[in-house]
Image 1 (tube, rainbow, N blue to C red):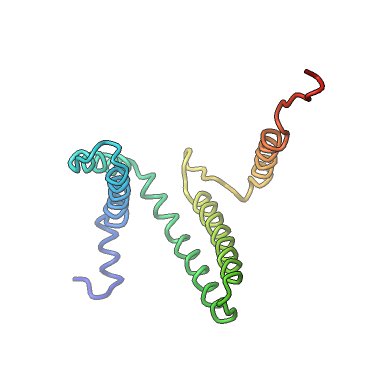
Image 2 (cartoon, rainbow, N blue to C red):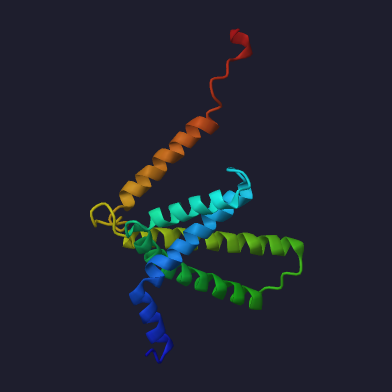
Amino acid sequence: MATTITDVLNDWADIGIFAYVLPFLMIFAIIYGILVKTEILGNNKGVNATIALAAGLLALQFDYVSNFFASIFPFAGIGLAILLVAIIFTGLLINIDDDKAKKVYNWILFGLGTIIFVAVLLTSLADFRWWGGMGMGWGESWPAIFAAIVVLALIFWVIFAGGGAKKNEKEK
C-alpha cells in the first residue's frame, strides 16, 4: 500500500500513467480540439473523436513520444520556474503603471521567454535519443549550427533584401 506521495507517483510510473496515459490524453485532446475548432471534417464529434483516438494511439505505438515528453517537460518546468522568478523580481523592482513601460516590460519578458524556449528545445533534443541512439549532440555541433544560420541568413538576404530582378526604366 502506498503511504507517501512519492510511492503513489512511483506506482503510477510503474503502471505507465506518465509514459502512456498522459501523453495519449494530451495528444488526443489537442487533435480533438483542433478538429472541433476548425470544423475541417464537419461537425461530427464521433468522426473527430475517432481520428483523435487513432492519432493518439498511433503516436504511442513506439516510445518516441513518451521518451520525448519525458525529456522536454522537466526542462520546460525549469524554464517556467526561471521565467516566474524573473517576473517576480521585475515586479518587485519596476513600477509599470506607464503604458510605454508595460510594453518594454512585455518585450523583455517575451525575449527572455524566447531564450528559455530555445534553451529548453535544444537541451531536450540533445537529451532525446533517436537515429540509433546517437542523440542530437548540440555541444559538438555548434559550428554546423552556425554555418546553417549563416546560410539561411544569406538566403533570406538574397530573397528579401536584393530587391529582385527589377529593370531600370531607361533600359526599356
